Length: 280
Length: 327
Image (cartoon, rainbow over all chains, first blue to last red):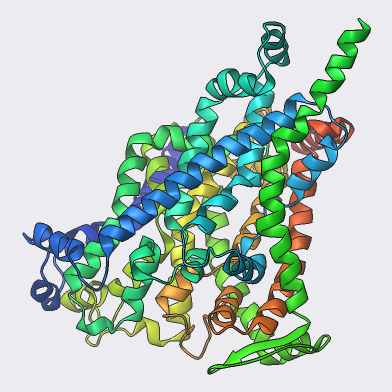
């Protein structure tokens, strides 16, 4: 009797999971199908089968004169890669400083970073815009990159990782061998932190790649814009006059690279989600 | 020996050097802007056409003016949009997490499902919103599919109705976040002593009893943490409604969120009002940040005593739970 109810439970669970998975994938399935269809075909109605216009839509998107998509991809790549590099390196550095050294303001600094960890960046956007305008960085990618030096959440992840994987004796031993403090950090600690750096680099990269609010306020010249801003201009433009095949292809270009990378690294990424979370 | 202690003391000050970049960057790009934002909130300072008005010091007038300018309406919108996505998200995530961690169920393909349900979390919200806009437009694929299957005759105008627009935003937020929450809750449930579940099983508890009497109480801290961080995320809601409604929160500004309003003020260079709105947001998120901070900090090594107290409290709770089961 028990095994019977158990079996029903498994069946229900499987059905629910299939429905949810379907919901997660269905929209992307339509996206992929529609990106292979021409404007005329798309006007005719819906189809579950792909057509043959994938390459044509892609070249149309990449060669669009009014929408510099190639520039957008490059800009997005630069901003995301630099942000990921800066935030992981300097967060590891900050974590190292607070983990290894027992200085007077150590506890205060740690408490402070924890307190601001989930503070939304939007609340300082006004002052931020005025500041970077005064600094001559308005309409450049620099203000989207440099502030990632201070990333409290990445710091917290690095700190937790050090607690579990960086023995204090190791730093001590390196000192006895005559290594300078910065050499210890760069040549001994960074290699140990590689797994944590990789996980956080991915998350920062994705976050930056997808970021829309601040970049849209900072970047004004079309050639400097990142992908999310270009997508938003699609919505703002006279939508009905657009080649629909191109719109789907544009969304593909923004979404699919991330999904492909994710599918290759999924186990690693999913394990990383909870590592930096609250320890229970 | 004496020399050595002196040297150790010197080392400790290296800490300042290592944390300097973080704090310098924070002061320049967050603290100074915050002070400037607060300062601006007390000034009349806006651009009208080509004319710049201000800055004139006007006390708290911006604050009272923004309250009159439908701040409450937008706060309500933001809250409705958040809660409409959050409730299904937390319910589904709890159920999935309980199934995934149930040793007796041995669900097949668990790992594959995990990968699939987390995927939408990584997707560019603005592109996702643009995709939904296209799919659910009057002549979009969803409507043509419904018509081809003869479910409706006329296209459903999703984005012309309040519930349609809000529903789509909530659906997108749900899809983007339920996988993430499931994985967080799974790790919380995995952290619970498995003997508790075994004992409950031996005592003949039903699955529902185990879920409500053991799983839920044991992961309550994580649930609260999820709730608060999700609420902070909800306050920041921008990309999805902005793109879906082209920035105007249509119909009738019913999907206009607080950050969309802030975005409008910033775009039109109304610094005074943007400042006042930012300060409101700062206060709300400050309170929420404090709650999150209390949660995380009880677990960090800096608070041994607190952590110990919490552990003891948890032990007690376990005992109570166990007592509750046998009774």
